[in-house]
View 1 (tube, rainbow, N blue to C red):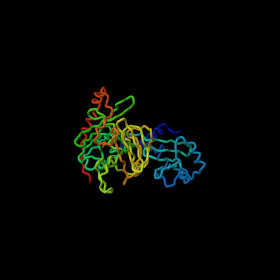
View 2 (view 1 turned 45 degrees about the vertical axis):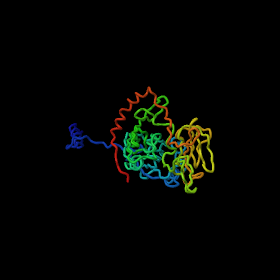
View 3 (view 1 turned 90 degrees about the vertical axis):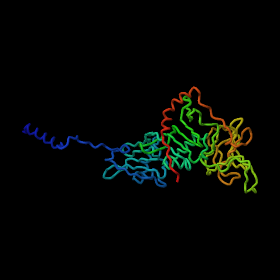
Length: 409
């Protein structure tokens, strides 16, 4: 018969031997690490990329899974995942069991960095498409322009889309084809991230500041109509930056020829041939936008104009867009400012790809850059005091941004 004292000695011996007499730290338990929901200690993961001609069926058949099983899995998960067309170069992950003979447990496809599609093939078959949670950060950028806005931002490793957003905000007040050396800017914007470190795009511009030709222009994002959800950009005086007409029918490019009634052309014996439009040079296929709301009154083709579109904006103003590769509208169609009405081409009498932008006022072709064009509807007077109060903080933040100066290479 075992004595109780012997049992007590055994228990104490086991307890003491399990303790670290030199440390008071508790025994640490290693946390389980999961990847795509699988314990990393029990599964292995192989990362690959979609090759030319690869299909979901081909990939799984190479892993020893026969077609009937693949078909059943796809049918069961067709409402949850779509692997009908895998994109060349996109990554995918094969998840295997850690058995003596590894078996393919699941397939994970990563079409974008923002999420992935997943299908489990063994045990219970199911599929799901997951989107990573976005986080948002407010960032700032600034600079003195020595060459172009794009190059100034590129030198700072900033998202080049900032150029697009700023040109869009100031499209009615600044000619971005003719920025001056020494122009300055500051901007506060929000950028989205996944995994807290991978940027996936700018979501909005909160505030901006631009000095062009010595004139300061602030821009603050503001909801001017909470019922309709209308958001505008207003300046420091509460005036709408949007005007009735855009400065240009294309986002980016250059003015290759201006409105000039005394233009001489060498090909015509250096004779005076009036040019009643403004030419914006841009690559073939560049979208052409209507510079204001209006109705399409012509969408046709002539030997000189090539493929062209004409828009009636009201009883005073018409605009016309020449040498298109293709039109995107029909006669009678109502279009809004910024709508794509066609694409830059080389149709008609032209020596290079561009859009010739023509502007009528009271039936007479005029230079749009010398007109005092109407502004958009101003902010409601009853909202102005609230606006001035609401922008105090963001204006203070913008003013505190130090303008960086880096000479372009």
